[in-house]
Image (cartoon, rainbow, N blue to C red):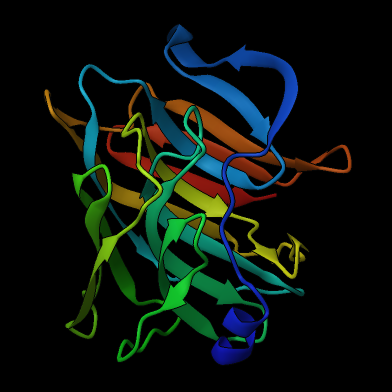
Length: 229
């Protein structure tokens, strides 16, 4: 399935916003916005620039049909010409795909990493410059770890950090969005040239399609929780 999926053009995409008024959440500290394809938390335009993003989640069991993907990344919201990201796809047929991507190039599968429902996965991307970086996925349950050094002619702005569950694209359109239950990115943090930040205070993003809200995202300290509704 993974070979077929990549051959058919699996790719993450920048944030596809839905234009409507933002909703101010608890204490006026977090705003909620809506997207066709992203759910989670986005920090944009920090003091300094983002150089790394990390987060840990427990692999869910997807149901229904289609797929969804959990990833961390740099850029793709306020700056959409490039995204450095890594993550795991969970498919309703029970399979899982681990991957890295420097958008606009497509996703590439990691080899040698076994993933099962319930495994605890740590994701990290690091930008060593605007055109070079690395992606690391560690299965802390099994002890397996894979990494990939990357370069790209598409330069990062280093203005966004994300912890995202995505309805990704395949064959030029969004895949059916699988019911993944709940994904919580714990110990989530981003490194800037001015220091580290947690997701607390980041913008909350939820997915809306055909007039229906498909996710519910909350932020608590260093945790970002995305529920399929």
